[in-house]
Image 1 (spheres, rainbow, N blue to C red):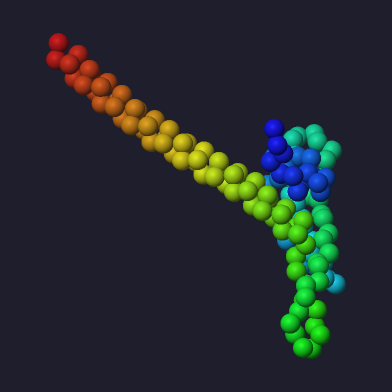
Image 2 (image 1 turned 90 degrees about the vertical axis):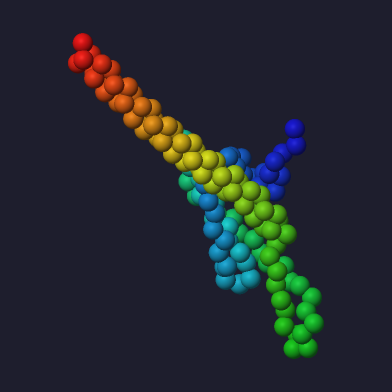
Length: 129
């Protein structure tokens, strides 16, 4: 089975399923900082955050002034795509869970209302006897 997150694996991320969010910080001196947040199991000694540094790569510039432009590292770019997929999957799951819970609550209310209605009708019939 192919690895779903090859870039993260190459970076040393061993538990991508525990990632809850990330921040991309524009660091000083032409580097980017990626901060990953994890939801670890109770009792785990693993860190809840990890930080990775990526040097920006110089890009050829058409500028006559000789200014050097920098672009995001290819590894970081690929990691961001994988992280977006992880975070989106979790968000979609949370939304689906919330919708199912809401439907269950609505159904529970309908069943309780119907049960009360039947109990009331039964009580009326018993009172007539």
